Length: 338
Image (tube, rainbow, N blue to C red; front, side):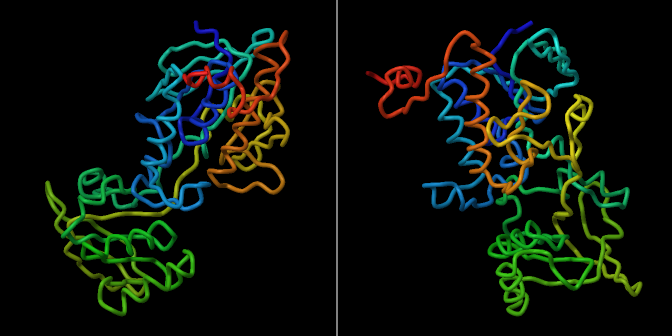
């Protein structure tokens, strides 16, 4: 069993920066994530999508942000446990005993939940035959947009993800955009772009339609879409993308005695501690008055939670705030010459 200062659940941007902040102040930690890669939703859902609200970074993709956060962690020897999840958390004296699905065991005074919205999976198409085309010709996220270059792509959905990718892929692909309603839920600026591309013939728009069938044996050949009035259209297509949002699953977190409210975990804004001493929540999963679901907010939350961990991990030491510009201790931890 590993005895560590803190255990982070979630290897997305907030979890990665929280790990950096813990190690910067001299605490060790390990990170668990149910995905098979580091990066959380940034990597799983929008690795190629531009992000514009990271301070001092005018524009970067989810993949670029993840790579830079991993590079920032390079001075520290942090263990990642991927393809795993926490199944059991129970109090053992002043520590938390944590056991994962893969049988790993930890003893720690601090558990930081940085799991975004918990375990998540996309809402899927209802026709059963869609399953055989998943991850080959039918996708619920875009991991490599080059796959669609020069191809016909049928995009379903009316929110930001569907509209953003319709605009993006229309530059090098033939795009069908299918939505079950006349109105879109995306940002008005993006809706205006889509309408402009429809008017110029770059996007073919089908409203009040839904997918009723995917046709083909080994390869996808076409799809049938049903109109509200019963009319059926057959569209030849190489790929299908579905953007219907995510089904949020808290999983075992729901059984840890936390004061969960609508799949969010209320926290204080001093330590980002939950109603359980030594368990913190940062990132999209936590809630408090004025909460903004932004990556930069998660960075702030992780920094404060990390410093709150010091008191429980080092009860006989006093935490002293230091700046990386002047502290020789911090510079040494970063591997810098002093």
